[in-house]
Length: 83
Image (cartoon, rainbow, N blue to C red; front, side, top):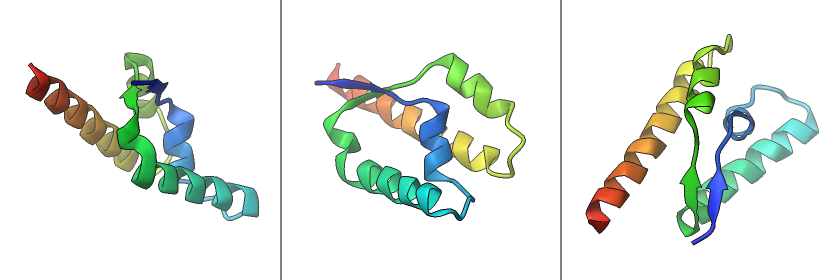
């Protein structure tokens, strides 16, 4: 299985509040990929990403953190079920 590293820009694209065409397109691409393809890959992240999210000033920091925490919980449960 191919591993994909999830970094803060992915969450930024997913939760963007920008309204220019390029940002809206990135948001749709990111959300579509996440809905349709994420389960085909092993998704990984790092403590640095979690730390960076916590330092954000956006009102979306909590949503991004919850999203990433849910993702990490899902990974942990998947690994435990394989034992």
